Image 1 (tube, rainbow, N blue to C red):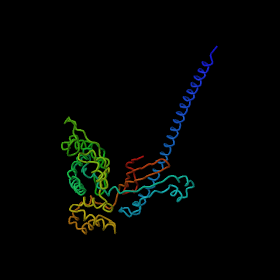
Image 2: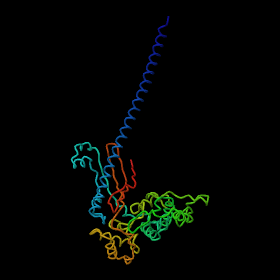
Image 3: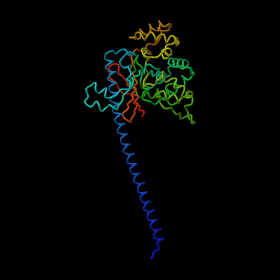
Image 4: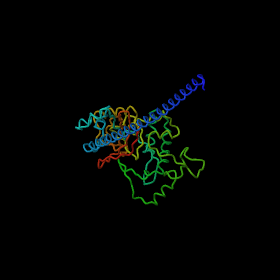
Length: 371
């Protein structure tokens, strides 16, 4: 026979054990439900992000259509007063769809679009620091180095860094396919008729052509002098951080005035800021560049001859001796900035687009997304 006190103790232990089992089961079930909710939320976020990417792709196609249509109306001139230069403020997608009579316009009520088009040739192209006189041969462009020096000095930076950037650019291009592209007038073409033996001979000439021996490349060699290490190819302004002497603050100063394009390009004098104009025109100071830009605001330039007349009017004595291939009034490269806000998903896309001056077709060079 069990005593009453012992029975009460056993019942208490059973109750505690049952409570522990129930608590453990509740913890396990809540954990499973939480993981299920997290998984469902992850799938929803992936769906929203995929939809935002498709919306951004559609907006990019629409932007390319604007560039093509404008090239049809004014094929030889690109100026800031064009339709491409009007930015799009934050606007509901349903407003765009409603204008074209889309029956599902209200489905885009929670989706917002914004963006702008930037003239990439309004900036100084660092690719111009290296010339390609013949396919496969890379040489330093002294005139462009001097222009970059003037720009650096104008912005309060060390002008001697221009040569370092040129050497870094040439070393990065040494094993790139773009080294076979040559400059033809105001446009860049690709020469494919050179023989393989001539190309190999050009690459084997060493530092002057960007071959295997970087004899004058500061800080680009490893411990073995017979096995130089070529730096990565410069693809953006942020690549300047790999060049000795550049700090994040210096790159931030240069960002509004410098770009890196796949080929050498002329500066569009219809869209370039005063700093870039003063840098690429020898003998021109910043005040003269500002006067040139102020005159440009009243009427855009139709050809390079108009540009030279305006430079003479701004007080530049060397306007008639400027190489016409370094200046232009039209643009082939554009940077498209777009932002999509689709419910919880946010996507910022930067796209470099090339517009063919002969066919007016557009091609995407690269696309970079920021989530």
